[in-house]
Length: 189
Image 1 (tube, rainbow, N blue to C red):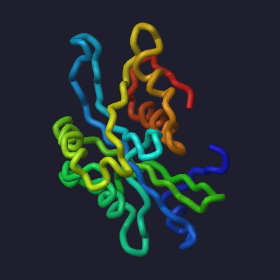
Image 2 (cartoon, rainbow, N blue to C red):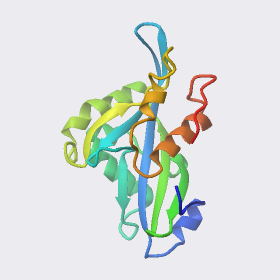
Image 3 (cartoon, rainbow, N blue to C red):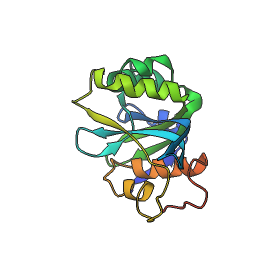
């Protein structure tokens, strides 16, 4: 994305009061299930359909005057995902990167949190009762991490959706960095 540069966490926090900070998280869990009894799922990765019809990750803007990045992110998670998100905490160790959009004076912080499949399912179950469900968040979706035999179905088709900001790139970078893709799957950012 043009005009966006990666920063170290410390650099992003030193930018000053004219910069706004947004925090988002990729939640994932190992999944031993099989689609149609034969296609291994391997991992469940959550994204959400936003109010604007684009896919993104749970989270939002935080007020550094009043809260830490992680306190703000965890508050946003409960608002967007409900009480299932209160069963775990995203911490500083889960921080992956920060990106600054200089023209907008916005820093986006991206986190990755591994959950158990039970924790992730609890988030999915609680989400329809969350404060922001039906408003900021229209629903949750699991990312298909497989490619069907036609070469299109699964992740390739999912990636044809419209994503907010750098969410598509963050998804692909994280899937590759953590080794969550099927062996042999390579997607361009």
